[in-house]
Image 1 (spheres, helix red, strand yellow):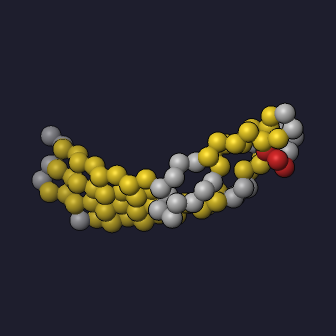
Image 2 (tube, rainbow, N blue to C red):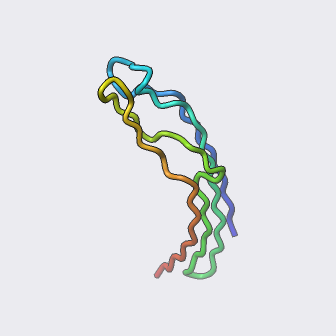
Length: 85
């Protein structure tokens, strides 16, 4: 059995050469968890990404005097099964 937790912080970023404030990406933190069970050649894992369902911008482009933003993915839960031979 193995467990993992991680947190990433990304500071404010300007996504254009002119450092336009309206096209900046605000800072954010994301946390994820992973719990895995391995037996012989089989691994079963539960994964939770963006565990606290943080709303954040993945990209923000300057367009017509305003930012054109792309939201980051919301919370994601997954169960994986891996068979190794």
